[in-house]
Image (cartoon, rainbow, N blue to C red; front, side):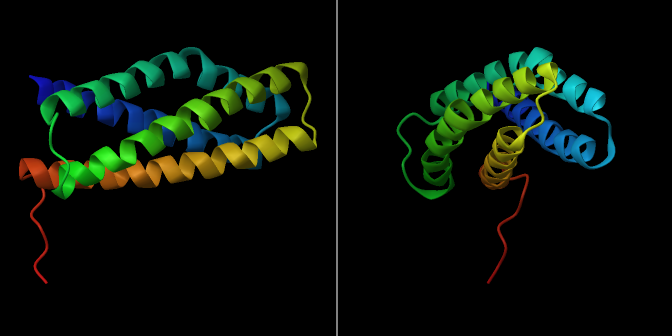
Length: 149
């Protein structure tokens, strides 16, 4: 059961970040300021209220599934998770809140776009690291066969 919960939470977290990332790029390139503001609001509410619990559940169930493992694919996943969590907690969440506040006021100034760029970079890094964790998880469960050299 822990594996099912872990997998569901991990997929939910990954999809949240991917949707936030892609929708931000789309609206910035192709939509009006009003649509950008609406998107930023949706990322914060309900977005963060879905993402944050999903990340917590992913981490908690991951550590519960393999509390002592420090090597192999599990070890790699455990080494990535603190960076993913800190990146989310220290960059992605504050950036999402800031961008939402700025967009709601119609303040699309240089600071808005610099924070947007930082958020996109941090999001891309987290998506990459989470993809590696998903791949390693699939190897651990046998859903993905290791490649032969």
